[in-house]
Image 1 (cartoon, rainbow, N blue to C red):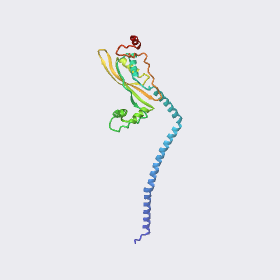
Image 2 (image 1 turned 135 degrees about the horizontal axis):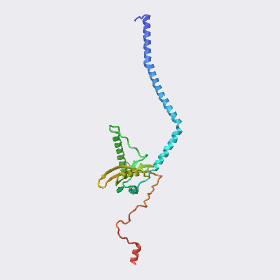
Image 3 (image 1 turned 180 degrees about the horizontal axis):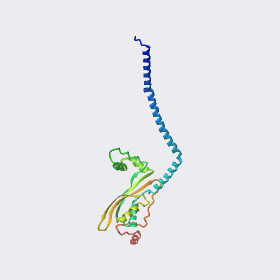
Image 4 (image 1 turned 135 degrees about the vertical axis):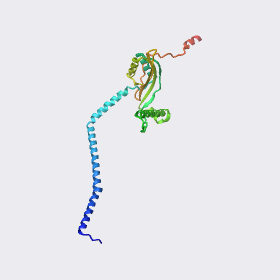
Amino acid sequence: MIKMSTRDKKLLISFIGILCLVASFLFIYRPFMEQVTTLKAQNEEKEKELTRLKELESKKDYFLSEIQVFNTKAEEYQSKFPVKVLEEDGILVARGIEKKLETTIASVMISESEFVYSPEVPKVEEVEEDDSTWAEKNAQATKDQIDKIEEELDGGSSNTQTTIQTAERGLFRMQNSIEFTTDYAGLKEVIGYIYTLPSRVTIDTINLTYDKTEGKLVGDAILNMYTLQEKDKEYETPNTENIKHGVDNIFGTLEVGTNNSENNND
């Protein structure tokens, strides 16, 4: 058995005490202080969030009134969209351009309405991140969305097709092509006329060539005619009284009436 002097015992006790202090600091005090620091930072974030929420709460009436204002504006804007666009609507747009402006319409091609968007139809999944540019990503995303919608409209997804047919509100587009002849001033008037129409019509694309012999611009344009189909709105038939509708008998053959037939039999 090793005998220790009183001095050695005191040194040993002091050393053990120092080890206990170091261990307490490393394994108890420092983790506790780190946790306190973390909680303090979290509390500061919570206090900032609470302050922000209190500020929002104090402006609750203002936000509610602004929401009402924007809802009213949205309804007013949506009310400008026709509920439906038919072939005669596209023809009337082209006729208005030709009658009111110094522009000659050579031909008009009418297309069928196609589905664009409805908040009740499931959204297309977002494109994964890649190294493409912003424009390329948008173009690809738009193409993928159109391809998927066209596939669904062709019968690829009966559930989505049913949703489109029964949706309370849906945006549709008719793309009509016109061929025209005008000059530079007339072209500006055509563009201004289209964008001042009460119906929702936009220019999708426009191609122009200069005719040197006539000094005119010859071109073609694709016009987008948008409709917002809603179940509580009805289609308003356009006024076509001043437009010649042609004849019922396009072949010009003779028609014998019933009265004449009876007289001949007598």
